[in-house]
Image 1 (cartoon, rainbow, N blue to C red):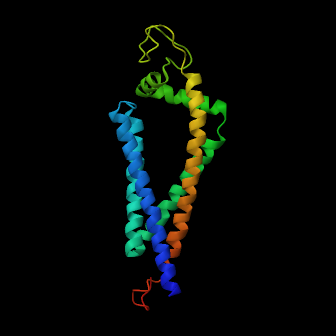
Image 2 (cartoon, one colour):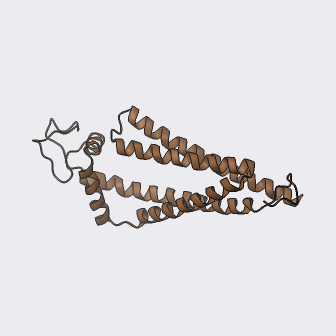
Image 3 (cartoon, rainbow, N blue to C red):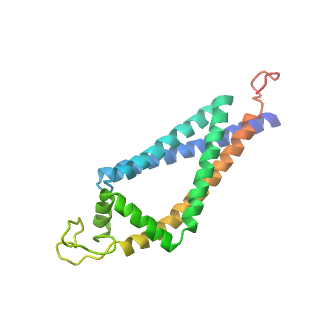
Length: 204
């Protein structure tokens, strides 16, 4: 009975964790589609990146869910390996987000600003500013302040938002990286348990 209870508990925990990942993946895709539909984000790279991460997470979670339901050894093994690799990447990125200083933030923001005109337009429109470090009224700008020549550069406004977003994003990423490590441990534990419904002499 104890073996059966442990097996069932591990399977239910793993299924619940993967259902959470499925919900997060659908949320990411939904946010990207919503932002594009409302015109909040016009950058294809940003929308495509969010959708790509959401789809990847959805298929990883689906593989884990099917593997947990069927106690499928091969699916569980690959799920465990992929989840561990995702944990390493996410933990590293989240730690970097929390540790980055102001000078590094400014450099990265300027590089991102210069690499995408669509991102520039989105930020100018949403933050009501023009240019990164200086306003050039000979160029075009989507901000409402531009016709009145009352705009300020975007660097300080972006910096104020970016610092807060990096802290929040780093904290959320760090939290989810530990849930991924929990998923790896649960998968390893569950994979090495014998299914009480199966043939007791069968190797699992």
